[in-house]
Structures are given as structure tokens and as C-alpha cells.
Length: 225
Image 1 (cartoon, one colour):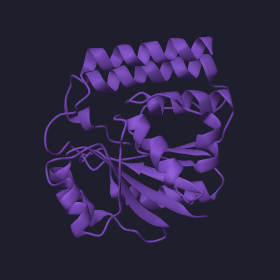
Image 2: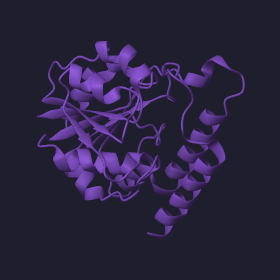
Image 3: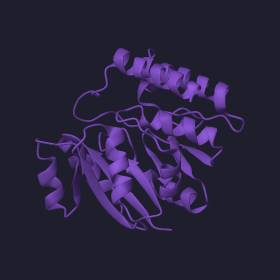
């Protein structure tokens, strides 16, 4: 099976500098980046390390993922954000389970044996919100093993499955939509526990309340669809 590793970036030079040396291309078909218009040295970093870059004409994480799938000639893709949260050591695990025949493989920050970025605090709003959305996905659509991290973007998916799901979200909600539609279609999903590190170079660009409302609207739309 040919598997491409896709680095999704928008001004991620701080994270790239720390994380990129830990990425191994062993067993991968190709490593390339999809960039949303970085101006902080990210593009120069990729050029220095001879990593092909696809520039986005439409902004957003979902748009980046669709562009990556369209451009890839591989059988499956692993999506990675170099912000410090995602662990490059998990790459072989994605490869293992994609090659075993799973359609969607998710690195879970919520299941037993996993570490969530917020676990060092007693107040964990992002983790609690994620678990809330996980609960409703499982109650409405899941008839198999409980999905513990329906939202995490560190995931691998076969090209065939991605195209079948026809996800049309442009932003951070793309992964939630992907999980929901995979459950609707009874695709094979596998989760494994991951270690979520602390973010490098600032906070997430996704503001809590507006982002939460986008997830609510997506959930309601998928209920009707």
C-alpha cells in the first residue's frame, strides 16, 4: 500500500523547527505539505528540506485535506499538523492499521493509555467539549465500538474512503464530519492511544465558543442528511 504523509501548515515555523527532525519517511510513499499562505519562514523551511509544497487557493483545513487527496496518487494519506500536539512516533502505527484494511485510523487523545494536552490541568474545557461531541456521535450513529476521539485531526484515511465520504467542510470541522459519515456508512474505523504534547508557538487559532457552535451546526446538519 502506498501511503503519503501530508503536513498541513499556516505559519508553523516554530513547530516545524522542533518537530520535523522527528519525522521518519521510512515506509512512506511521499512526504509533502499543503500550505495556506505562510509568511513566517515555513515555505523557506520546506524548500531547504526539499519537501514539495502545494499552495491553497481556498483557506481552511478541510479545503487543504481535499486538495491533498486530489493531488495524491497514494492509496492512503496521513494528515499531520506540526504544532507540537501530534507525535511523529505514531506514523508506523497509522501505516500498520491502514495496511490491515481499516478505512479510517484515528490517534485518540481520550482513550485508555492516551495523554491529552490538558491532562496536566484540573480544568480541561477542550477535552470536556470534545467528549461531549464524541458522546453524541456515538449515541446517534455508532453501532460498534465506542469512538473516543471523533474530532482529532491526526488521522489516516484511505483515498477511496475519503472520496466516498465526500466531506464538504472547509475548516476545523472536517474531521468531525469525516468521522460521522464514516459511521453512517459503516466503514472500518480504528483508534489507538496517542501522546498529545504541548503546543509550540502559541495557542490554537480556533476560538472556543465560535468553533463549538460550528460543531453544533455541523452535527445538526448531519442529523438531517
